Amino acid sequence: MRNSPFIFFREVSSSLSLSFPPCTGPHAHRQQMFNSSSITQFLLLPFTDTRELQLLHFWLFLGIYLAALLGNGLIITTIAWDQHLHTPMYFFLLNLALLDLGSISTTLPKSMANSLWDTRAISYMGCAAQLFCFVFFISAEYSLLTIMSYDRYAAICKPLHYGTLLGSRACVHMAAAAWATGFLYALLHTANTFSLPLCKGNALDQFFCEIPQILKLSCSHSYLKGLALLLISAFLFFVCFVFIVLSYVQVFRELLRIPSEQGRHKAFSTCLPHLAVVSLFLSTSSFVYPKPRSFSSPSLDLVMAILYSVLPPAVNPLIYSMRNKELQGSMWKLITGCFQ
Image (cartoon, rainbow, N blue to C red; front, side, top):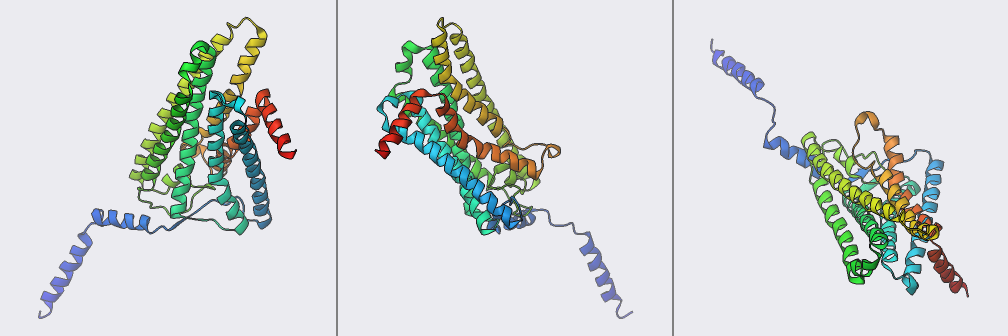
């Protein structure tokens, strides 16, 4: 009987400790935030674990990167050198080449370095910088392609007012608006993405830092918050797409009214490269946004990422120079002049 109070106290204490619910309040949230803030690096998806294939990936990406540098650099140099190409169409093309150089330089060098040194790591700040730069260049390029569709509309449908609608000052303002839109858009997405608590490790299923892959590492409620921002982005993407479509509907309607077949062919040849670039950009970049899990896999996401991040910057110079006799002639004069 002497020990009964102590036995009673021990039984009550054990029952109370079992009745307490697990911590789900602010302390748990702080613990999640601590887990997120403790991440100092991310692990990118390797193309292969075989050393020989890693070196093959390095040389393949190096060839693509050098081709993109050469093609876009040649377009930039030619347009800046030739006074006859100082027109709105070529001014916007110069800006497009700059954006292509920026976007491909954001992803490929780090991927090539990882394959060369057999590593997967990218620092937390490096990942944030890569995501910001890539979103900046991609969104600014889409804004610029939308402006370029307006340029083709004004040149063909409003030829008498073309100089007024697209004067030198107006072109500079439009290009600056495209770059500023990309900057603000990238800043918003980067701040939102890296403000979310990450609860599912630090391994990304992509060869560069991509928003959907980082959102997969966040907590459930945070993921929905980021997904809402992506849906808003998809809506703006759709609005620009509608503007491009309506512009070209008016352009094609006007082209059918041109009586001369030669004049119609010449006008159409100025629209075809831009239309091809827009089609390539839209068909590949539409895979940026999250897909249902049943339609998603690491290998499929990897292939789609290569298509929209590597293919357009490397192919765009070829598309614009293939049918443009004026640009080809200026390039040939520049190249032959350098060797004389």
